[in-house]
Amino acid sequence: MSQGRGAVQAESRAKAMVAGAATAGAVTLGVIGLPVVAGIAAVPAVVLTWRWWKHRSVNGIRF
Image 1 (tube, rainbow, N blue to C red):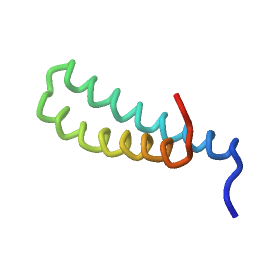
Image 2: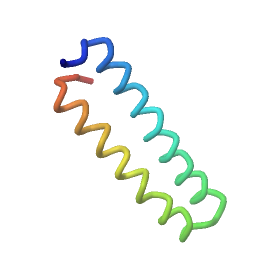
Image 3: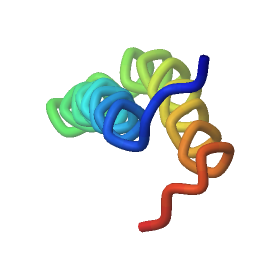
Image 4: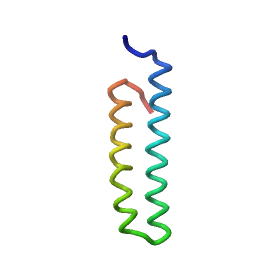
């Protein structure tokens, strides 16, 4: 059975928070002067952001 609209939007918000936190962590590492570690931390941030965008597009959620 498919999820309701509210459940899909709640899942999208949760995915956005995780992707945002990962991105913020990577940016913070870059700002404090650890560019190699920031580059490594950016990989999961990109993957999580991609999954979030894909989830929104598959479910027809607009910005």
